[in-house]
Length: 175
Length: 192
Image (tube, rainbow over the protein chains, first blue to last red):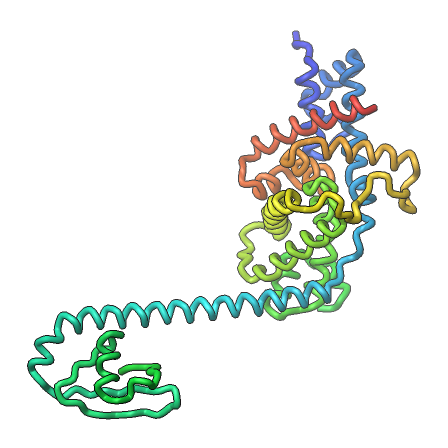
């Protein structure tokens, strides 16, 4: 003999029907037992009615609530999207620039550390080293200095520029 | 593709056309198709809120969507992709709004989406009352419960689609949804 269905089971089954898009019809292998339960249980009948009303009326009730919102203007949205793209491109470029600056900074620092380690020997050797400094006024100077060590490090650079009487000019790039 | 044909095209075709050719009509059609569902979801998630909030969130979500559309890989349906993005951005928006509200002057008046607005042309007084009761009961639920009910019972999404949006198994969606509906029915019966 089949066991009688309890309220929880019946309500779960009703919700399964709703999930499958069958509600408020009750179909499937347990439908007879659910119907039998609903006949006998006024609470579950009321529950079923409330659920059916909620499911059927929800979209309409929400739509009525959003009517006050002005319609979206695709042109304005498109303009905003274009501006967003521009911002993203700028951010990407700024990121690339920052990465480049960081890479240059790191290599200059590394070169400086290496030159400090090497410099006494180089100074003592007194050889000729080529200095090329590109200045802010786009003037490119090429000179040869005897016994001068320049490896791009800030400290070394300051010493070098002082000794070559071009101290007040601002260097941009050092080769 | 002619305008009429484009209107009947699946979302994924519109996305493809917009991404590949920058087709304006495809863009506008997608916006038109998803504006109302998005507004219903936002209304529910923002717990009513103001018109300004709704417009801000909506614009933010659509902007984000179209900015990243080129990265849509067609591995899920566009609908699922859209709801996932909308849900995540709406939650971000809610968090920001909560922070802002604590700083906001309480006397600052904003145009609210009032529950006692005049009935719309297609809304009878009775339907309006029932609708108000229903929405107010819905807004009394937890955030996730509201979202589940709206996605399933208002937007007609399948359980598997909701599972994909939320990133949880289908069984979890089902049990949470059933619990949420049971709570909604209880709230409605208490209000009746």
